[in-house]
Amino acid sequence: MTTQHIPPPWGTEWKPEDQPTLPTEPARVNGKFAPGSSGNPAGRKKGVPNKKSPLEAQVAAHGEAIMQRVIAAALEGDLQAANIALQRISPALKAKAPTVTFELDADAPLEAQARQVMAAISAGELDPDTGKMLIECLHSFSALRVADELLQLENQPPALPATVVHVAPGAEEG
Image 1 (cartoon, rainbow, N blue to C red):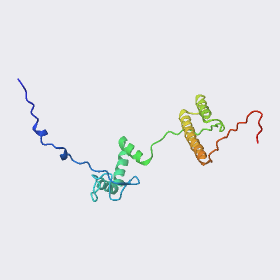
Image 2: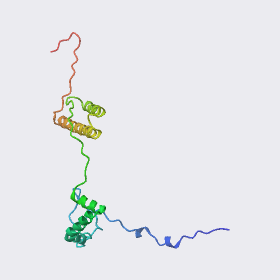
Image 3: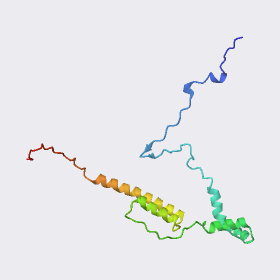
Image 4: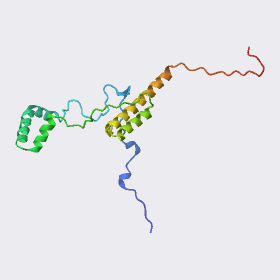
């Protein structure tokens, strides 16, 4: 028994020229979009209102009354309302390391200074977070030092090549 391959009907009408063309990238001038072109041509059109605007207007109009109700609920013992009120009144608490006095040998190489910081952490003179911050500062400082050295090299005139004079034994220089 022989089988005959019959192509499906949906694949017979397709032609390469029927492919949709992709939109071209908007023209850029100095890395910015040219006036009148957008990086998102399918984005929100001019005149279409922002969906948040009506809600923001209502909150602005009734915000004080809402906050008074939240505070009243918090005073009655509602912990969730108290949490909302406190979040709006005071910022979140952040960990704050104590101020420390720590001397580094400024003339020592940066690696030796980092070792001093590590020794202070090991001895308990410095907390690890502050030590990490100091080592990161040393790293940033080393990058600045390299940049300064490169600038100095660029501003120096090129060195003349050394010339070697060969004098035969017994001959005098003239």
